[in-house]
Length: 115
Image (tube, rainbow, N blue to C red; front, side, top):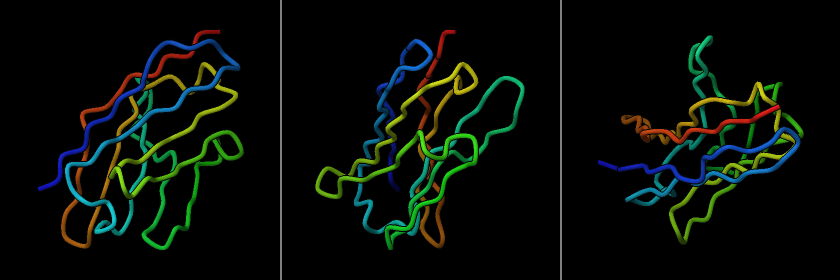
């Protein structure tokens, strides 16, 4: 069982930057994929960014060019750097990590972007 704990969410002005973190209780190297999802009041939970064990990344069209997912294997931490934030980026950001058998989620961190 792997625990994921997100942190770093806060209120930020539009155009600003923010980095959220996801600390894993186990090795993220054992994961096939790690990623960030977000939940907004009017939408289903949507994928924001993910990274495979091979280092390949993909992003939703809405954040491409603005957000960057990265990992620090020594710290077992996944990051999401968010730049040029927009009000529509507001939501609860969830960390996800998956192996072939298991799918782990954190409790989420709230990001609010004011206009």
